[in-house]
Image (cartoon, rainbow, N blue to C red; front, side, top):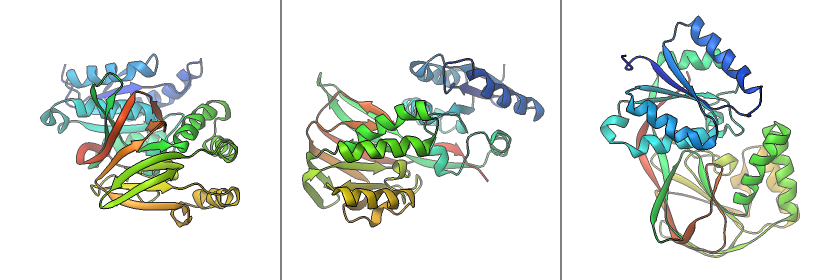
Length: 310
């Protein structure tokens, strides 16, 4: 079978209920109408995505389409970065958003449910090489580890909030409601963490509430970040008062969070966390609980072929 032209599609259902078939039926109908040649596999759970993506890569598919959200995209990006550059350079990544969190799709102004246009974009194959971030750390067994990300790494209090927001999205089914609920909890559960961070020639050595290192908008915390300039945006947030948090909520929603006086923005190729004791770490919406000691976040420029919208 020639898999050079056929799409390899991984469908990641948002909910493991009977409703999981409904979205795929819409996608399938659109693919048939547009006479797209494809093969598809469906993930059984979050842990099966990487296995399925590697299966498509190893079987020679050159167009891999993720029908899913940020977690599935993160797994796909890590699979692509695990193969030889010569293999990765021949593969393009397409996206049809269908996730609990669709922040990477939101950056490209891709709306969930706009299936026909998204299929048309993949057919047109308008490709751009995009950057990817990487966190490098040592785990509790002393093993050197790394994890790639498309959106952001969050360190500190908002990492907890991001984990909570993802859970709340399951219940509310709305990005806005899940954020509002998480924000209210943030007011009453504020924490500070002692950090020692090196960003370019600057050193932040003090108590910090949260740090976001964004390859894209970082779930709203690095609103000016773009995945094609070879740089990461960093927002360091010191402990705000309650009234400042309310102001911060308004600025966050309006995309002006960097105007808040408790937020200190940077732009860099690398961030070194020399100390972030007891601070939770979140990579593209997933908690990383095995980090021990210092860790580094960096960017790799123009390494993944992504199919852009018009």
